Amino acid sequence: MATLVGLVVLLPFLGSLVAAFLPSHARNAAASLAGLTALACVLLVAVFYPQVAAGEVMQLSVAWMPRFGLTLDFRLDGYAWLFALLVALMGGLVVLYARYYMSAADPVPRFFCFLLAFMGAMLGTVLSGNLIQLVVFWELTSLTSFMLIAYWYHREDARRGARMALIVTVGGGLSLLLGVLMLGAIVGSYDLDAVLAAGDAIRAHPWYAPVLLLIVLGVLT
Image (cartoon, rainbow, N blue to C red):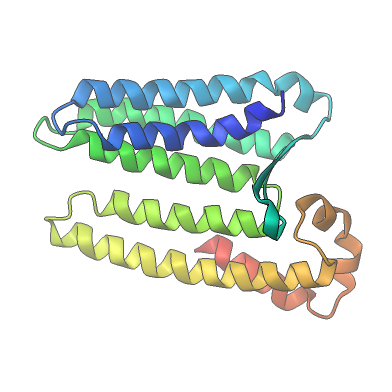
């Protein structure tokens, strides 16, 4: 059952990869692919409702680079479930809107490629089980949002908006990273369960105020 948590994150990235290879005129195929991917994510997240409602925490750890002790950790509790459901539902609504908003002359598959990658990055952020992984997915949202805003790259306002978004979000991401590194140093671990269990120790630490400020600054951007 826990493997489905990883599948929720993986599906949008797989859909994005497929959309990237669709011909530029494959409007209906790209929209259908994106819509079905979002719907699949909604259903997968919904499957976990009984466990989440009972207070269970679903966790999945996948060995990534065992030689260096690196793993991909995913964690689904009540808050993560709620935000994952919101991301998938909103992604589906954006797909539906974009299908009828985008001009027939636009390379629609490219848009859905970026959108699905953005959705995957958002799901990775809310389902990450350790703080470093969370920051990596957070920065992926910065990159994919830049590509979405710059979709109509032939327009000066789109290019300007994309540059501004990238500067703000990457700057905020660096602030978040510094805060996370300090938080990990306080707790002695970047594992989210360990961090959540160390609330009293974090609040009593001299670094608490600057860590809080850095993380809030990152979130606000």
